[in-house]
Length: 314
Image 1 (spheres, rainbow, N blue to C red):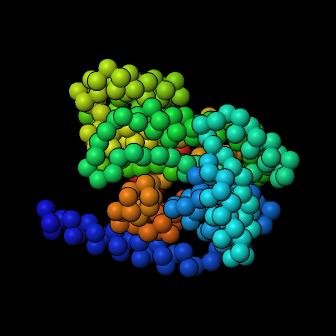
Image 2: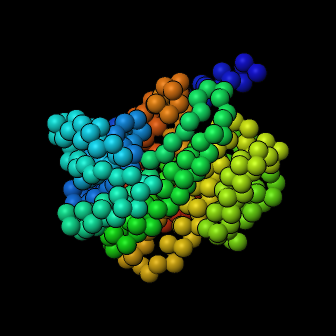
């Protein structure tokens, strides 16, 4: 067991070194579909992965809007980047508050007119280490799943029509995988429904999280086949993954020149407040795949799941 853990660590470290090297290679002129007029929004970006994605995108020359639920810390975070010479703006945004979303959209419309990239990073997790309380399940599902949907639905009408297409990137987790090494889901019915991408709908995803929350209220969730570690967080990310596929399918039907490409990625177990700083990946490395996805020159990639710049299965 120790041997396989060490091998896994070696493999991951090697891949992260490769990614760090790739990050130093500048995009060529024909790859750069963006300019300083390109507008990206990153939610929940006052610290950690979100802050790092803002920094990296601004470093590539985009105009980036850093959002945060807490105005004071958001202003301070943006100021740090502005003082570093980055083109970063700030606006308060609470993805659980419809009036906050509406105010944000009106501000975008008035100041910028449109956006080109939306990275949904805002999220919560109340379990650290081996804790697995479902006490805050409603808050976790509301923020990570419904909040993400709220801001996407509000932003789609503001996404610029352009030949290169607009981009939506959802920050998620391999904890929400339906199969594979990290999948802890034992409910075969849920797995089958969410794996069937041809029949998958937003309604099916909504019903899945509603069933989980109902079982939490009834105290029967432990026998429901749900993951037994980081349960509420895992279910919320499982829902985001499935919704990304539904969204990508819907958006792919838009006419040429109005396309929006939607993908999701797992940043890894990052050393941030969300993991109690117990992670094994730096915020810089964790943010990398999200930035890479947002800037992909090949716009035909949509409805996919990535980790460490590689496609992985749902």
